[in-house]
Length: 197
Image (tube, rainbow, N blue to C red; front, side, top):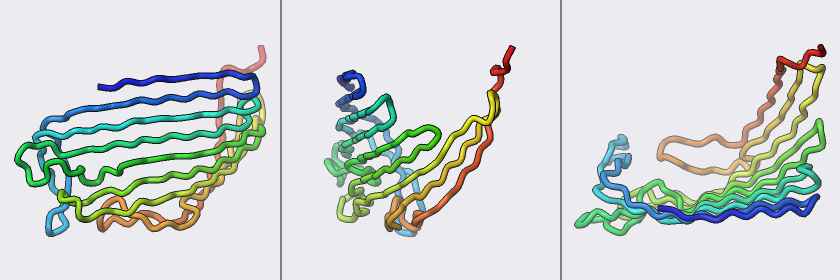
């Protein structure tokens, strides 16, 4: 089950939208993947699990969408509710307590740039909740332009830096995640239906 509320406010050059959703659910016969003692991933079946939490967001648009500031957050608690299980009441593995994204974007046509911060909470990696992956933060930045060459053709150029601070983080044991990376995208788009008649 879930329940939520959303709000939108328009002050001309300032537009605000926000929302909050609460959720609560029980899942029977949940299949959970986890590594065994040899490091091989195997499926396990939980007779009953419970997930409770909330999602919320705030978007602020300034000066007719020239600037957008966004906040998105999910907090959830997933528990083993299988009666008689050794880990009854413990958090499910590989399920971070929170994921939060904060971003800002500037649009000055044809140029745009953005910066985002993603915060991910601690995630347990065993049923007893005695071992865990640390919380981490990832910062990304983008800069680009989109320019109409004609009524039909548009060129797009975008440069990105992901994981700016070369954060060392783990999502799965023995599966290293990428460090700082750079990329450049160049695209040429054709749009039909804009010929002058």
